[in-house]
Image (cartoon, rainbow, N blue to C red; front, side):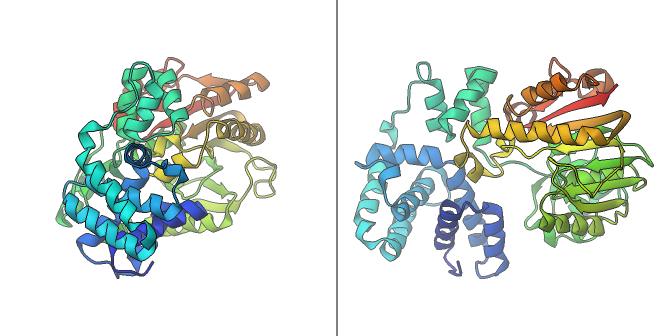
Length: 448
């Protein structure tokens, strides 16, 4: 991936994602860090990779309309080249169709020369026939319609229809296909939100305060965040607004002992420290020792001293915490990530509905294991970035069925200022199409 051509670099990244199940953000950051791709081409590379991943289902559906072979039957190189070409023709207004076709065909001559004529024909036929594309009937086959029109797995589209009804499911599907907002959290140990907004404006960043989080700022344009002086000075960290609300619902107090059981990369950990005014003890644990370095680096940059990191499998008893008990425990459980697929679109193509059952079992086992470390009258906040009921309400109910010493705390009377974000059972549940945040879930459990 050393080419100066952003289309070739995008192809190489998409190929690695297909073959190695790699993460798009890591591969893009690695490519851009070489500083070989310059200027506007850096933005084009990012747009092509994320755009193709977000719209992959729709791109394949369009290809199927103009190719005698179904996309899944095509050679991988050919399929990826067609996706890149179709994406530019249909979804990139600033790239002329002629340029999109020519650039893709030139790339095909280099990477798949025998298929270059076929690729040229499919792209030109798709452009000429774009008004003839017929999507599945919305009323008779709603899940298939949403899957093809907005590029999501059919099983997920069906799940959204069952949860929300077709109208809201379509709004959600549309929102999940768009680029997400970029939100940061102010380091209130060093600066106020109003002061940081002024500081960012002075650094040429257009931004505004978030609607729900008292410490959030939405950046309308920023360039590379890590190069901003305010980032280097530890005045903020990147964190979506929905994620910023979970520590607020945990409500840690000064001097308490808190466990963040699945802590990496540390956004919520450092927010808990801020809420505690960097006092007390915060145990930040994760099963991946390498990811703990991210937490330490963030704490150092933000000037936080109350966090201790440990390697720990949250599903099993650990020597890291031994006989320690905690006033509060945050379980930001490993999940499907269905609520953040607009940020990590590669994830939606590597999962199936069957995966949710295994994830739910793991989530229950984490709660089962960690509840023993909670003090009497202590609080557990269970959270996921998933939209599925199976990973959220069902997990909470399964845990409560085995642990009558715990009860759900209704968040509505505790946090009335967030009332529109709570469900009828007092859980927090945010939706991108409704709230402008990632899909997130939180339930507060208290030991009697």
